[in-house]
Length: 262
Image 1 (cartoon, rainbow, N blue to C red):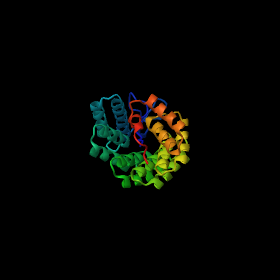
Image 2: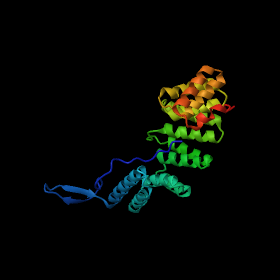
Image 3: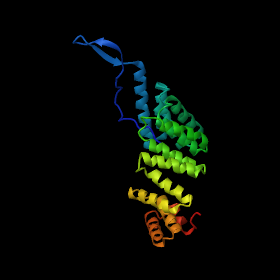
Image 4: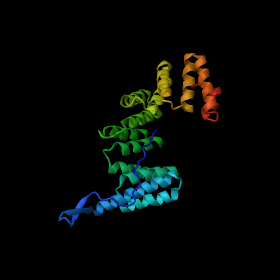
């Protein structure tokens, strides 16, 4: 499942003012705006969140944690800081703290797609699939959410983990209705159809996935299994050769000698 990490704008060197609350008289007799205290706090939280994210990307998790906690000292209700902190807490294997921050971000922005998708993704990952589905539904209701196909895809994967193949297929098809080039949805739908003993239709979706030019060991192994089930030994051998050549150390390559899943 894909977790959408909040991405800030380019790092600012100074706090930028944009909310006018008090004024000073300028040389032309007009009134010059300056930044409100609440806006200053939010700007500081944003900058420290961006710094924390950059330190995390560079592998300096300790400094990242310091910057993110500092962000919340400036503005404890700054949702992006909670989101990035949640990602960091997951990375250092503290799921309880991660859950608290994912939930807080969704509480602060209850109608926005991204924090609801992130929380749903996390909940599904820790085995709370039934609760997760509610957050995915909230995510796709946001009319301004730029990537609803991501939430539909994550919902489908979650339903697959819950052994709800019909529900997973429906969600993944909605993802592809929204974005026909969503590689995750194409690959997962191929897998769902294969698991549902519909190898012929599964082949169509694995071919669409391959047309995106995003080869992976998982996709090549699934292609191999689909063609094997369809009795196309030449096509299955081609997938085998590609998998062993491109991903020789992968779990999927090592599994080639094992029987395909029924």
